[in-house]
Image (cartoon, rainbow, N blue to C red; front, side):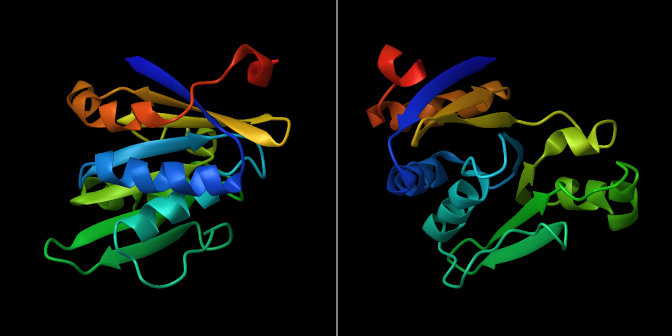
Length: 166
C-alpha cells in the first residue's frame, strides 16, 4: 500500500484535484471516501464524474443510496456513487444488490464505507479528506498496486506543509 497526501487550499482546488484524479482512474474499481460531513467527498466525486465527460448535474445520493452515471463517449463508462450515511444496517446493501454493482465493469465510489462493514469487499483505493482550517488535506491510499503508476500525474499538487497540518 502506498499513501500520498496533498493539500487543497480551497474548494476550487478540490475540483481541480478531482479533474486530475479522473485522468488517473481505470474504468473499473472500488474507491472508498472517508471524512467528516462537509469535508468535500461529494464535491470531489462530482468533479471526477464531470471530468470523465458527464454533461449533467451530479448530486449526493444521501437519500437514494446510489446514483448511477453512464458517460457516453468513445468508450462508455459506468460510474456508481454510493452514499451510505443513512444506511440503518449494513445488510441493506444485500437488498440493493451491492455485489452486482461492484462486479460490473464500473467505477464505484462509496462514501461512508464504514456503514457497509462486512458487506463491502476491500477497495482498490481509500481517499480520506480532513479539515485543515479553511483548506483540506487529502490522502490517497492506493491498495491495488497496478493503479500506482497512473497516480504519478498527481505529483503536481501541493503536499501538506507543516503549517497546514498543525
